[in-house]
Image (cartoon, rainbow, N blue to C red):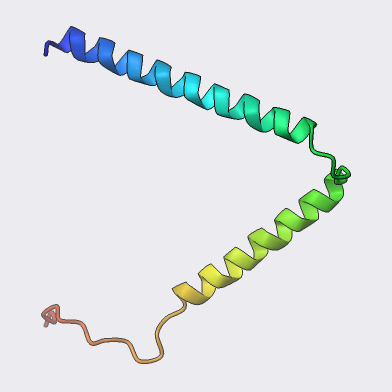
Length: 79
């Protein structure tokens, strides 16, 4: 496959991915517009998202906390 053919194939693949994403997004929008549930106020949605982000950040901070008993390094010590 030549460089030109590879570039054209990549452009076609990108175009197909874009079209598939656009179809998916249009379907999501239609589903939202036809959803019979009552709308949520922006402030409520933002508060819920902030709470979710805070929970993920707290969990991530716990995961990053140093271990109580760190494993000794196997790297040689400089003298």
